[in-house]
Length: 88
Image 1 (cartoon, helix red, strand yellow):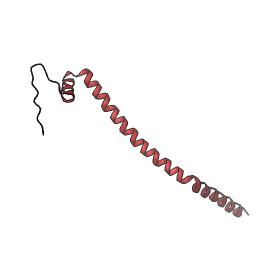
Image 2 (cartoon, rainbow, N blue to C red):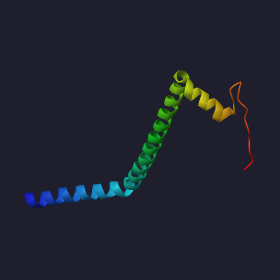
Image 3 (cartoon, rainbow, N blue to C red):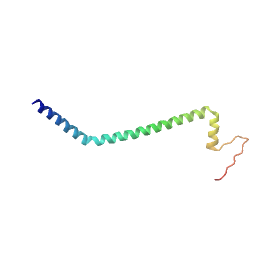
């Protein structure tokens, strides 16, 4: 008798689990996939944020970096320099 009750309980549990995974399983795996994509995006944004923080620090505190940035970005030159531009 105890064996029969155990079989019924195990069967009922298996049916409930199968029913749950048929309805909710695909949603779960889709959600996990989305979570992984978002984690990767968060990591990329944090790296970019760190890079920008470093650049801000350098622009505020390193005059040589600031000069290089101004030259490269805006084409600026010192008062005693002449800029030559060549077409490629």
